[in-house]
Length: 121
Image (cartoon, rainbow, N blue to C red; front, top):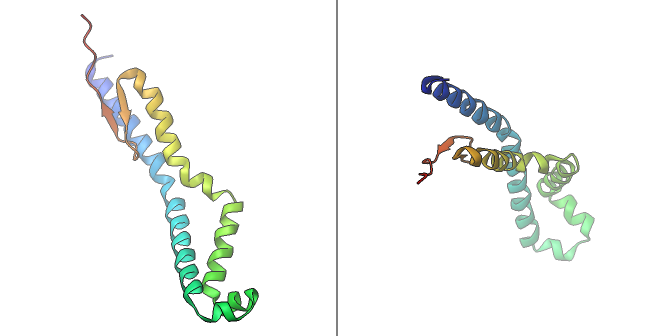
């Protein structure tokens, strides 16, 4: 196999790896969006002076944004979305382990990093 074919193979591998990691990103974005909504709703719920004066369920009823986003977050957690959020970093870490044997690595997006060959003396 000549160097031109090797370069084409590396480019094809890099394209496929970046494509695969990129496909996992939408789930990550939605998870983070729900997390931010829950955090914002929690902040508004906690700073509301009425929260301390009424019962727990009444305070949740008075803050539907927080209640809905919290229920959604818990539902997504039980559905296993947290595993999909960390999947891109797990895949990248496993690829780094395999690629290290070939003096290569990759970043978190799947782009290949070629390392210089060690000099044998």
